[in-house]
Length: 114
Image 1 (cartoon, rainbow, N blue to C red):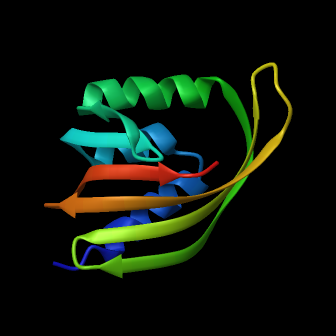
Image 2 (image 1 turned 90 degrees about the horizontal axis):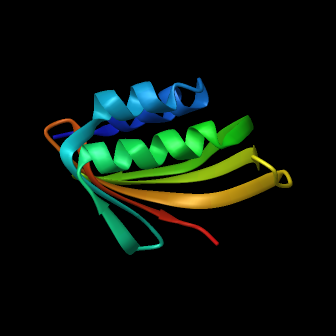
């Protein structure tokens, strides 16, 4: 199964600012997500709540996708995110997102940053 088109669709959705819509479309009900591989969040509902809190707590100034690697059912995407957290200073964050896909949905995603 080639997931390149789905990975690109997720990238395109995020770049358009359609973060929650993209999450709803491309993430599995049993998705497991984490920051730097710790404190895993299990299930779509818990992860959507986390994403909603993040999106509503920042002002986005832009995002760029860099290197994209796809190997079987796994993908890695290099990101540069530019945002200002509510009540905080503007941040330019570089991170790598590693995803595992099954049946056209992300089932595991880890954000490496910091």
